[in-house]
Image (cartoon, rainbow, N blue to C red; front, top):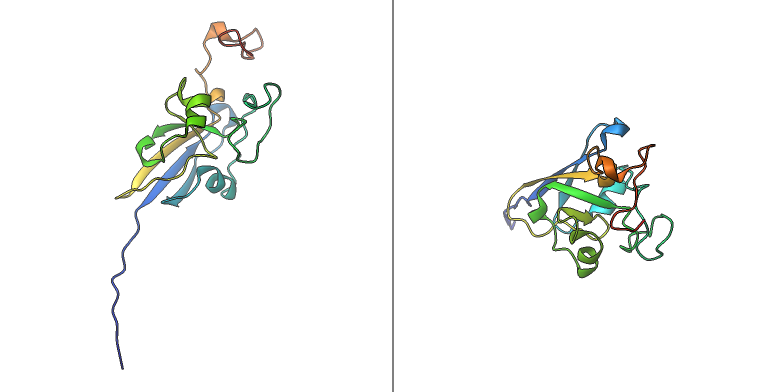
Length: 153
């Protein structure tokens, strides 16, 4: 009889709290992710709706829509309120689309949980354009709809 003993090593994980705009009145969602997990896939498999109705397609210039995780529509943009360092580095595509103007924003379809040495806590705000206070009073019309920023719609 040969007995072999292996040491089990616990993998570090990230506890992700997903917050929704106040107007939706939804409870926070919680997920556990491990290194290499894609944020968009993890949220969709947990039932978190990502599509931001205020997002404009980056590739088409008109309309909105879901690009299916290709990183061209910005509908999966999230604000990382806590734990930004635990995520992968943003690609040049992400930097061009969101990170130049909003350094704490990531495209969920392109962001993965990076290499972590210990358990991490990450807090995400989905649909960051829909949060109270994102638009100043002079950036919305009388109905509360956002006006163009920097001369662009």
